[in-house]
Image (cartoon, rainbow, N blue to C red; front, side, top):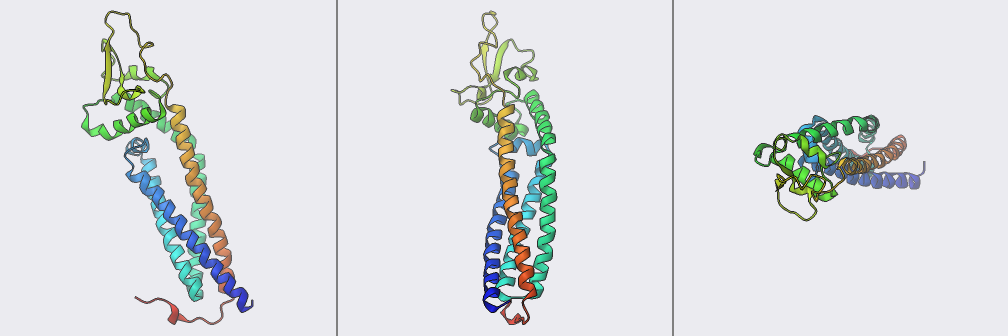
Length: 260
């Protein structure tokens, strides 16, 4: 390979690793968002399900390693260090295979996640108690979901009839988040002891949150899988370029390697 082609390969590899570095930061950001989010339904899911916590830690680990590999790849490419490029190629191959396995796992576990999500929500609705400070974050997250998606309950408003506090009440009661024009928290009630009013009259959102939440989850999983697919494509190109560059480097100058 001529010196001109070698330089082109070297700088292409550098650019790929720069992009690789940026996408690694995006994956890391997704993981941190899932782990520390307290405003969306992810907060409720990760509190009640270990799957989301594990997934967040995996994304953080993959993102951090991806950033590190992008950095090492840039150094190896610019300074033409065969040893570093060889280590880079090997690690990149392992990450590539791990991402494929993780992507397949996420794809085939979607139904399980949906079933798990249904169980979590039904339990949350049953135990919903505005005075329970221990579960305040989860309940606030669910109120946020109902307000944002204009929905009530999982399958519909009647799910709230299973709530422990409301079962024996003589009032028609729903969380205030089921209303489109109410910013209060906790339960909103109306006395229906005279029998003239029923739950069908109550002006709450008539649709359940199941379709909206599952659609939201699918969209976000799709974004994560899309980013991971983009990173995998860059990894594949990076491996090809690194092995090509490694084969055509004959004289190494280790004095170029940054020293601490």
